[in-house]
Image: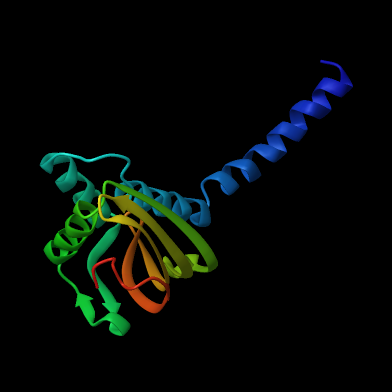
Length: 169
């Protein structure tokens, strides 16, 4: 092996753990869970009952056991998975199309304690026969890692930034 090839091989061996750590980092895994959450809420066309239930179940799968959702500004609180499923199902059934964008403002991870705190803005754009709607909510979400999987155990609605609370609160 030439010295140049040896140097390239050694550089790759040194860089590989760093690349793997970056790809499998807690931050990346939490961001992937956020993408799962957005994908489960999103909707591109009318759907049947089984699809709707599967989507609501997928949303609840991102939440830990136990969990709490507090939306004091809107008078909504739940710790029940069935309440969350009904809420998601009701919201998704009111629109033919839903797009979700999540902008993370901060994400503080206490890896040694398997906990993270995130502040983010959730943007929901929906449309259907009754017209289009845009809602923007700023939330704090606390995450917990259990059995190698990050899940939300607490969400607090900090403010309704835009919209009339159509999201169901």
